[in-house]
Image (cartoon, one colour):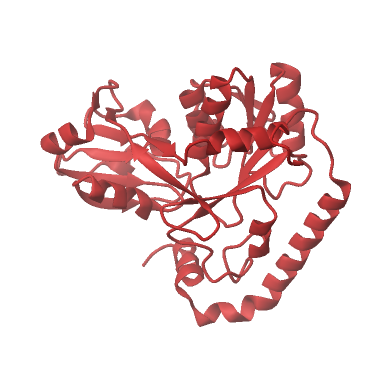
Length: 331
């Protein structure tokens, strides 16, 4: 039997009549979400520098982090100074703001901020108060563009443009707001953002984002193997995923031809060596997000698979231009 969280999510995405009594609470959540959004729209605060928010309207991961990484790299390739702000969900620290670098402890500050810092080299500022994180980032790094990893519903954070990432495989579940369904805001919110991106499947009105795998990397010594070479040497593996939709990772390994025994952990799980102590000696292959937490106690047969977000030509520049206000549309 799975955890309570897994049980609830199965109800959200597969349909369960026991959720129906929660509908009045969901109606209240939907009403409050609309009220807060209307209040924000009336005020329309202007950010001190261009701010691009990358978020979602569902509970759980949808693939925002690879998109944030791709946006940071695209902006920096244009000569823009970029900073990232984030909540740092999953970290243990209670001291904010936090400045995250590639060498930061993922268990302290969260896995996604460390991954962003390692993959991009951009400064990352953590604070549950996103407005304070923004102010600190501007003061310390003088960026031309700030990208917010999550924070769509954090309306204290002014923004120039909004991007929502939808899990194209799981969709919006039963389409209801919490607690009856997985939505943080009503589905109509998708019509009000600047861009909707779909990962892992088609979504009407959304731009597709495909996760392209690169070579497998050994946690212990940074050795890399191409997917084909890894398959020849290690056709059977233990596959570990503590992300929002683990099936997306397992499906990718299947496409690559691997015979993978799946091991699902909660999103942002704080791994311990015992979690990965499988007795058969087979390689352990995990996501890059999991790897940043497991690296301090890595074993020679532990590997991770980096992925890169692939989007339609020119789309990253369109998002950046929208945030900068140079595409002729109001942010």
